[in-house]
Length: 357
Image 1 (cartoon, rainbow, N blue to C red):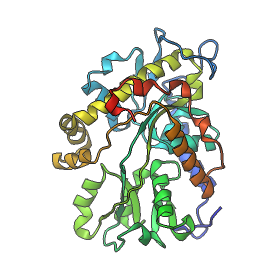
Image 2 (image 1 turned 90 degrees about the vertical axis):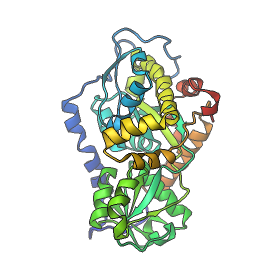
Image 3 (image 1 turned 120 degrees about the horizontal axis):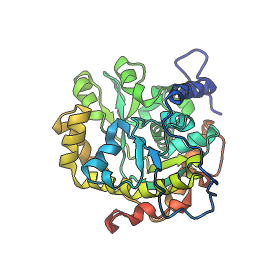
């Protein structure tokens, strides 16, 4: 395991960091709104998926900043759910999703590829049930104000915001590797992504990977003070739906998850095909950014691509797991354990050919 520098004198304690991420799970458990316990005989992972959703089946579906629920509503798909959506909790960050899964307050979530790896490392059993590929970068490296950093090669010796259990963390590790740097060449500052902006503003870190949706507002406020972005071609390939294995062992819930996947895929396509409506209804009305900023975000949005087979996704997930293992962040394992390939063709089968990869 490499030794990297920290802002503390004792260096980062990964065990304590992990415990801090898990700590909020107890609070979620107090308000659990969905049970992952199977009703009746458990569905084997080798058994075919049920073809019908039983009456009374409910799912709690993560809707970070309300986006998932809103896109289905605007696309006219919300009424097509053949099950009850018992809740749409505003949960998005990987560590929070894992906590909610553990607390049985969430049945299915939309994340990048890293949270399922982190859950596996923590000993929590969950599976990927749908995959979309993102071919263009979805994160941009932003500098603190008054920064002289101009390229990823300049990250050497700097303080970098790092979230081990989120996509931003792997994007950072990939960027370092591509620039010929190791984790030991920089100071990784353990934070969660919702702390990145504050850390940049305060000068706690020199660099943080921000979602493209965050960049316009940040530069609007701090660009005149010398804050800027570092553009790379590092992508975060996977956009996945995943669920606890206990949910997929419940025949009714497994059928409901399978029924949700086509609507999820169609919702992403609708957003891509209707940027003007999405800009106004989501970014302007719910995210409090200007229409011009929203247009800048959607101009960078990836065309959703749903692969009929998951071979590329599995290879990418294995490469990501190996990269984390090389850094000492997880133990080596076979990434195929993260995929439930019974669901493999569902998303691609729900969209037009131009959205299949």
